[in-house]
Length: 106
Image (cartoon, rainbow, N blue to C red; front, side, top):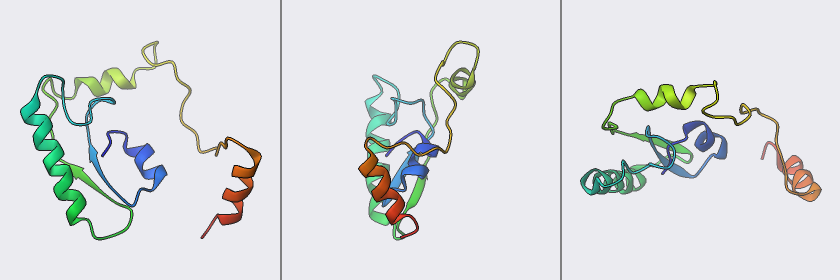
């Protein structure tokens, strides 16, 4: 279960549940145990129901203050100073690179 869809898709998990919430708050806002329990229960149900490898189920959820957090997260004027995501593979070791390239397309 995660709230970073592009990362989840790139990781190609055997099965997953996506929640469109701010990073770090996958099961809901702090101090809202009712919503947190609901999301966790929905996630378990989704994991049981998924039948196709790599399937990602989108769980319903509404962030209490609406979607304003998305605009803040997308700001490029100093709020988030990380480099943009790219498609360049990175490996911890040269052996990792060699193994990944050898298995590409399996």
